[in-house]
Length: 577
Ligand SMILES: Cc1ncc(C[n+]2csc(CCOP(=O)(O)OP(=O)(O)O)c2C)c(N)n1
Image (tube, rainbow, N blue to C red):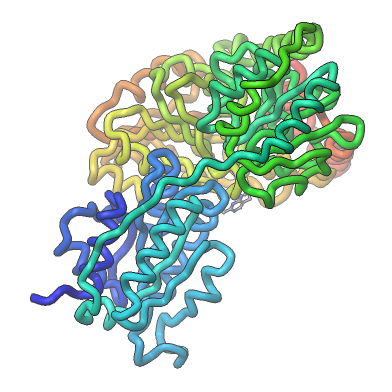
């Protein structure tokens, strides 16, 4: 039998290192999927919602660095891929979407399920190829793969069923993926930076995900410059653990001395970060140098005095060869001491946790961190889960933290953890889910986990609300609205679906309940943790408008007869309990 276009597609994807394709079959996609079945080298992960499949693929692709495929059929199936592909773009994950397309004879006729892939994917995709002629196949597939892998982001191959089942024009399915080049600033730029470091009495570092492969170099530089090291959420997992200079995060999730360190230093080095909250970055009073391999990041969140384009590892390694050590560690010591006192503050609701009902999320997260293995992978839903994960899950050389940190979609954690579990079978993959997030996307595909017996641990922060938005609205000075809902007993729902369910209502049961969940093998677990919906987290730096908004919202709530809620908010957040 002659090779079909679909055969070339899957052969090339398999040759590029794709191990899995997540999605839902049907309609235009059937001839494409028939090729996947014939190929046999790529595992098809049949999910119940295409978006769930993409979030799973994002985690797999981000952590392994290998391309991962997702698929959806023309029109509605393709639309379901979109949110996850945006996430892949923002988180830098090489995901290749195989998008079903209407028959070539129907293109541009407003046929059933027809959608222009160019227009539709424009915001998400780094490259979109519409494969309408077998002659294009090798070239389009090659470009989609190389773009995804080398530019670290999503690409789309849109393919009508009739083209997928047509004879292939070019039978070759070889593909060569070059290693990314080493990128380093010029010597002149490096010398200017060395001079600026020499001229500054105090230096601080703020790092992001770009420090992923440069942890040891950055920690060494910080040590030699006596520089405190703050980080974005995405930089935390690389820069916090085993780093005596670590001073926490800035931003609304911020903790520790990071805000003070980056505002009080004479010189700030921004390393591999596109941290988007400009109001938490210093202005003219601090000299700033930004180093990033993506030139578009330089100076976009705050004006900088010098911008260097380069990989952090290569650039910092080059600096280490010539940088002059600093000897005065008083600035560093002060920031580290501030960080320590903030950590003591954070411990309050952890230490008091066993006595407080409803369960404090701080206590839940800290206990989870204590019990989880040294190489556990933690995933946080967008929502308050991010706050508790950022503050109370301890990192480690082999621990991993991930979420929709740059795209900030809800409902990412459970599918992220599922994808990670498939990529790293047997390793603890733990999703800290919002109850809104879990019911948005994770519930249907709990069935997928059950069927596949994937031991993903899902811990639901059952607070009966879209709590993060509840907090946001109060910060904006308005009365919380549209944020409450009623939940079922998630443990019973999970059991009915074939998963293990554990409901925890009492603080005394937190440790045993979580330990039981982590010990469960052979399938998914859902921990339904009934937590305090009034728990707030104060950032280490509270912008004036946030404080003002909160006060205003409290006053408005009193006037509108919500005195009870106001009293609970105050009582449960000023260490009265
Ligand atoms: C898909 C999507 N819809 C809406 C939002 C806005 N949003 C951000 S956090 C959040 C609340 C999340 O609620 P939940 O999952 O219950 O977690 P909680 O904050 O209560 O812990 C919402 C609605 C979003 N980020 N993504």
